[in-house]
Image 1 (tube, rainbow, N blue to C red):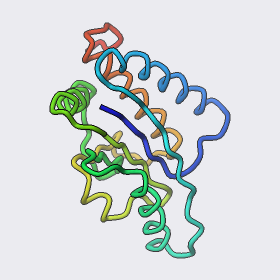
Image 2: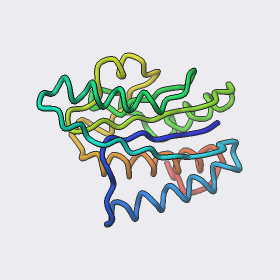
Image 3: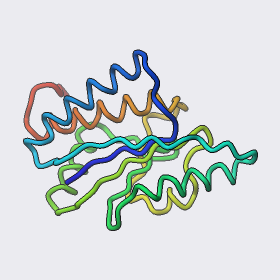
Length: 160
């Protein structure tokens, strides 16, 4: 199964980028042994439209261009479910075992994800009820992907 993160906004050089790169590499290495063939990240430029609805629609169209048909779509959304790491790992492992070709995680811009994208999502998850900058959400998501791989592999990284 291929895993992709589609994020509105760029992750510039700095500590967030270093952490994101570290977890990306860790998941890529651990994931290959578990049947996760590829992890990719697509950065979508933030829309410059004046009104919120247009910005969200433009960003949704750009995100949609990177979503293969029959993908499992997971929205990172403050209204989503708060999943513990073990449940998150079970979802990822189940989708892999069911033969899903792609699992796509989507991180919206400052205005969030369009209602249309949220409706298409098989799962919406939140990292708590706080609002997080997209850079931090990306780091947290990549860490959770790596943690999920270690849980599925029975590695002691995750201690619960």
